[in-house]
Amino acid sequence: MASKAAAQLRLPVRPLIKNMAVINRFSSINCLSTPAFLRTPPLSSSAPFVRHSSHSPLGTPSPNPRKKVTINTIQNLYKKGEPITMLTAHDFPSGHVADAAGMDMILVGDSLAMVALGMEDTSEILMDEMLLHCRSVSRAAKAAFTVADLPMGSYEVSPEQALQSAIRIIKEGRVQGVKLEGGAEMAPTIKRITQAGIPVVGHIGLTPQRQNALGGFRVQGKSVAGALKLLEDALAIQEAGAFIMVLEAVPAEVATIVTKKLRVPTIGIGAGNGCSGQVLVQIDMSGNFPPGRFLPKFVKQYADVWGEAIRGIKQYREEVKSRAYPSQEYTYPIPKEELAEFEKLVSEREQ
Image (cartoon, rainbow, N blue to C red):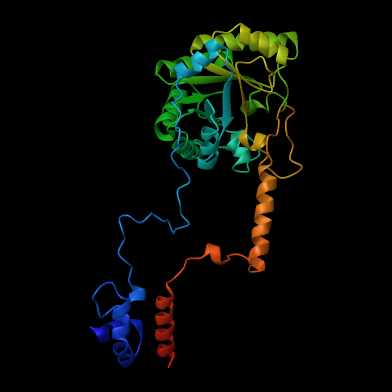
């Protein structure tokens, strides 16, 4: 047995046998074939659990978990006149922090095409890509009501196509509702989806998927005709069954009037303070982008995530280069007697 162990370790047989008494003294198991430093000590049921892997799950249970937000919750907030909070998220970390911060709703927006995938605009993202991000966010959002955009090309052909896409978003993406862009022309589509029991969020005003037809990212509803069309669109998608709608890039006064004419909440993004709630792109409002990036007028930057990350990463680089990291406090210990025995065996191996 000793010869076999020595052969496996490529150690001389005689020195190994000579040192068995020493090895046994350090061993908690009466086994002559395996040195103590090569064995895993028995786990104590009373010992605290220590994770030694860098592959640690990000999500941790909240000490004070919130009650799950439902459509009823959102409707009650609307009835009380309490603003509804919505924020975008595109992966597990961004979903986790939005949920932990208390957002009522989390939107897996197709804006992730640009802010998470580096695409030129929202029209590039595919359904399978949206589904991947939906699943990631939904694993993190334990309380917030989650909604996902139907990507361009997945719902415009017919109400039946839209329903099939919505079903995929709900079943495979694991979110609670879908959002789609368009006004009165999308009413039959919204009606078909809601009849199947899927909550729909409307989106009127500036509709980014159609920005080429709109002449770019321009404010909508600035003329009498434009404002009237916005109101007609809002009423049409309300009647079709949308339980809430986004108003984007609309004069505040117009958005306020439209909101007052509806029986369902509005979520503003660049539409003033008269809406029933607000939504922003998380990357924008948290400042997680390099200097010089264009921001729409309506974006207020609440943090400087990019700046903090740059400072931390630069310091890490400098400490690695100077060998200041990792210092002793960031390394795992080994008992002195085990280390001494290991060094002795290695030394004898070299002889």
